[in-house]
Amino acid sequence: MWSHDGRECSTFERKHYSVFDCAAKCGRYGERFILPEAHIQMMAAAQPFLSGAISKTINMPNDASIEDVEKAHMLSWKLMLKGTAVYRDGSKLSQPLNSVAVESFKQLQMENTEVAATPIAPAVKAAEQVVKIIQNKRRALPHRRKGYTQKASIGGHKVYLRTGEYDDGSLGEIFIDMHKEGAAYRSLMNCFAIAISLGLQHGVPLDEFSDAFVFTRFEPNGLVTGNKSISMSTSTIDYIFRELAITYLGRNDLAQVTPDDLRSDSIGKKNQQSSDEDDDKVVPPVLKDEEKEAFSKETSVQITPVIEAIPQVTEMVTAW
Image 1 (cartoon, one colour):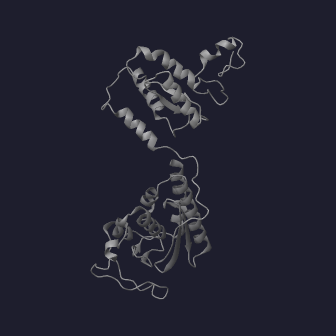
Image 2: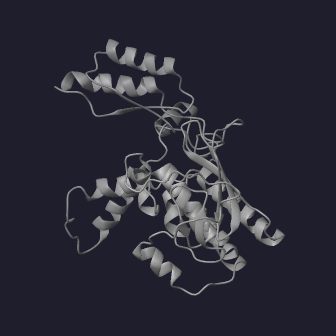
């Protein structure tokens, strides 16, 4: 028997090992592979008999440098090739064409082969797989990061929302602190914020979180003071993701007060500023249909929805 990379082979002579070489190293312990120069020389042998360029990839190992790529193009030019295509192993996040080819092969083995609805179906499948790339590595935030702190009051309960941003301005973490709340409730909110932060850093889009938790209803809820865009929320989590969606996603549809309402030339402008003393002085907002439906439901226990939300966040992180 002989190994996959030609070592410890008792059947073939060493001079025959190259016959079994592949374009890339085979397996975890593979060492042998076809050199890029061999790809180019093979193409050069066939080029004189072809009128156009050869559709053939010059495979290069993962540790290939820029100089190696330059040498490959220079050798191709010297051997009078009309075209080259270089691919470095592992340079793409995924290779969707492999799975598409397997699916196509299985379809050919079926007795009743049906014609595809559209000729671009394989390309669509490939694009969908590229979109669903899983980010295995956690995207770390800079040690000194930007963000903002938003203070608000929900039904008379103060909440502080702090955000941490990447250098490009995208959201990377959140902190939630409730003023004068019970230790259990505050701890659950802190754990919930950590779970959301981990999801954001592993690639879960903010809009997924927003769609999942907006209109979540439990106490404290009701009138919101201290926020220019939000005047009513169905829960603390509902307020948090409304604020994040408005700020980072431009979801003004989740705001009771739009930026146009805050313009100095708008009708009915407000000249008052909120403070600790007048936080309770609010004007009842005009609710949308979805908000009216959310407030019409019966009030549930305060802590239970937060406990149930943490596994949902974990499931979303795992799915992405």
